[in-house]
Length: 343
Image (cartoon, rainbow, N blue to C red):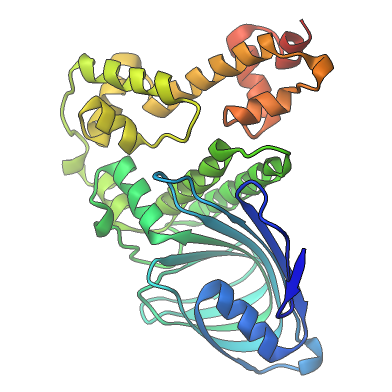
């Protein structure tokens, strides 16, 4: 563990980096926030005795060749402050307010936000924000990763991904973002074990990326809702067989829909349609089935007296939530995973 510039930095462990900081020094706080979010200028408007910045962050390494890194922050920004922020070119930040208030203006949207509200900060805008005793959860995503996930999900070119607005489509969408963030945080807790879990890291990045694309108005969402884009055409069953073969051969690593589609020789959108037509499921559904079978096999072969656990086997195959894993396992095999391990 090291300390520098008011930050406590823990050693990187299995692709997970944790940092924390607490300061009442305004200049030091500005440096900490700029390091995390971009080009920041700030002015203290409220009482200095109430000023404090308290933050903790988790940064997950990406999966090489698949998905980029992601950062999750918990931040308290005390007193009243006037801020001007410009993000890095490939950066995108989504905040979820837990307390306090935020008045934001990015030149296109103006918003007054309170607890439960979500807000997106895009890299192509200057964000002016007035904050008062702000408590928030923050997600930092890369534009390249979002473009790749958007291409896999909708078929648009990655470089065509543009976010139109900073507010969610609806209050229900904001609640969906909050639920997705809670699921991501729960998965991150599962990464505290003794082994690297690249599938779980990829799950966090992919899940948050998909949620961002579903929650905030953007060009990928336009492509899905455009009637002209809903019927990409029929794909021969041979492409489904090729996709299944690729999934079976590589289920032990992070797989994107784009990679599976490339192996099948079709577009991601066409592959989705083909799976629905011929198997009544998505490629992701089939991937989960394969991983569940592999987890079943490993539980049958594992020795609990040597320290093997259900949680370890589940995490190895990308299942971060023990309750959901147990439910899926019992549905498939009629017994609990713990029963299989002990048998």
